[in-house]
Image (cartoon, rainbow, N blue to C red; front, side, top):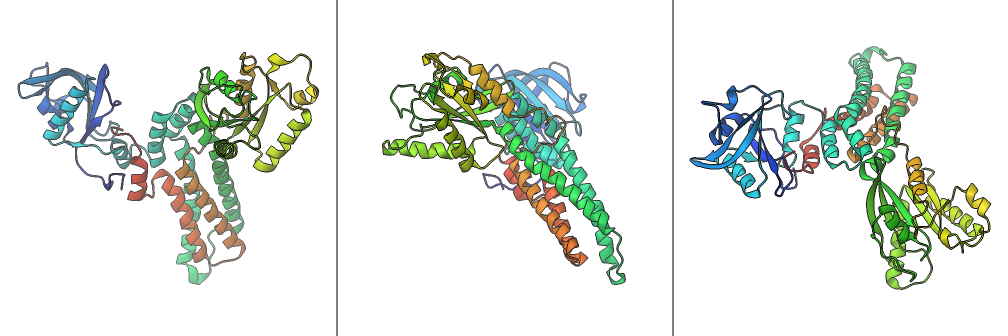
Length: 470
């Protein structure tokens, strides 16, 4: 069921919805799909051509005319025709391009509904495309990711997945497991004769290969998820070292309040920018110090939470008043608290504009790859963005399947557990009928990703999150 409580079952209703965002604009597009699309639109559309009928026109053609209600002309429009199965949904479809007035859009939709069209549920057009075999479930989810993409990298991932890059990999793994499963099922049919159709050494080798490939996909989720949603970067440090000034310099706007008074930032401040096609979510946090009032203490607690969630941490310190021993202590504390080799700490020595002489421990700071900046004067800010880009490898996903969807990640994790159980079952000489249960589980979880195995609940959760008209 979706959020409105409706069940996602395929039906023969003809549906409609705006395909363009709400609000007034130069043009708007209203999409219609279903078996009665042409006959219903013929009732409200009149072409300049004599005796013109949409059902008689060639597919993938555009026609100029008017939308009318009896003798009242509502608008001049362009109507695009897509005949099944060569349409987005696989059904007969019409797209009406009208002027972008809210009134015009609403009146056209009212006319369609009066003539037998139903207003579409969220994601129903894409749901019909899935049910009509235009693409599988993971490709359908990639459509939503494509719409939501805010950077070059997230767009590239969504395009690749929509075109079947990830699906093909899952189908390949599932097919290998199916071939193996058929041999095990054959052994069950001849159970009384104690026959082995599947060579046990080859089986274990195949299982290890499948488990390795699935685990590689699981590990790719940490990269895929941050590329899809933006890479979280926490800006931390003691009060009044220039964290908020740095955030403003990175965003090139006065997002955070800057003050000489320590503890000005009492809560986290977030904003997103795209650097060379990669989306970064910067988080300016409350200054780390002991004491302070109750509100500031809450802010510091949230800072620690954001540090745990961040992929990259920028530790900002005042270069003129911080010793190398203090920096090394920060690094050690970071390692002890985080215990995650993939999380990166970047040292930012701020306020170089106030330096009179070379600071103590400068050589050690250089060896620690410290970036020296003046956030106030916006000096060397480019060195930070370059370092951020180096922290994220974005080229390797071009030829590799990357997991970006939490549902896929969870299904792969369960499939991996099932494969591990299969291997343990063979090693422990368990009966074949018990092992076959884990085999079916692995096949089930892999099938859930592409929609070869699905439920109405899964469809509702996926398509209920789509926008209306997609």
